[in-house]
Image 1 (tube, rainbow over the protein chains, first blue to last red):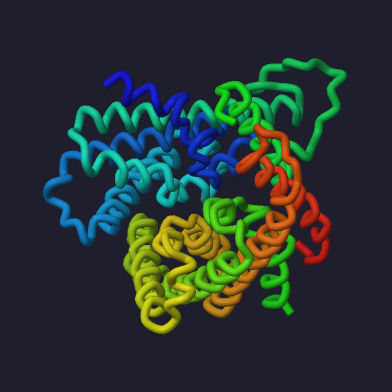
Image 2 (image 1 turned 45 degrees about the vertical axis):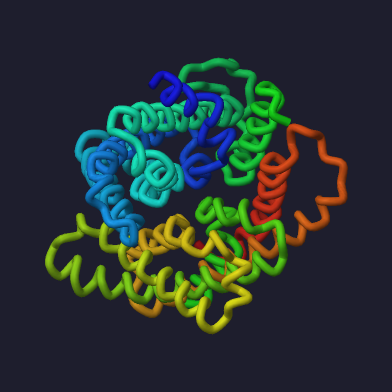
Length: 194
Length: 192
């Protein structure tokens, strides 16, 4: 059980190791807070659909399983989108179309296909939690790095001080690709998986 | 003229892959071989154009007419999943070589965020029918362009001595970053 949970955080981290869910990873990580919101929203969808699919795994016919998974996932995404719009409209506006795009996040469908559709509910829960938090962790790291080099802050707290000139490239697409590339390489170097 | 601007914007200045980060998974996955990249691009363009046409009608005549916009995501993803199935069946029967090359990536078009993203952007920007169709086709062309350029560069990179931690994903993302930087040169081409 603990192993199911922990593998998502580091060993099989969805972003750094499996390189899945790249669209939101690159698109919304302009700041710590955006990355965190996206990470938590994705975790919620992952856990909720994992629970639903794992409980229904013996009822869903094999031929239409992907379509069924997609309907379950997109229903939960609709829930998240409506919740965000009602309670944190400013973040919902910042994330824009990337919030509903959680539907097509490959991590979510991938976990259902590889894990939740085969394993009992309790193990699926741990797996979904681990993968979701591992994803959130990666987004938080990338968001912090990009925010730090963009305007010298992390989560709007000043880190580098007044002398730091803002670096616009970090919040533009090119900066997103380059920072993620460096982080992936760093991760490989540290974990020794070369 | 306006339609022309929509097309140029989505192909060059606001390329789906390099500006909106949509469709990165196939972009990283299939772009290691020119032929596969081109085939994937064509299949995706086809699905995207059809998606734009069909989802516009669904959104306009069903969702908006009956005030059930909250069903947007569920209905869009169903349309996309069925379309991909259709393309898969068509290729299997008539172009089996391409079907073999694309392999696992074909069903993955369903979870290609570029296709759903396209439908969402269309609704968000309130495009009319013709604009949507052009937008869908242009998005596909832009996706193909990015994929083919990337495949070309990766072909050259195979010969190079790349530092170990950068091999694979690292160098591909770095290349994509430089490509995005190059594509920024197109900004200003289209009046915003």
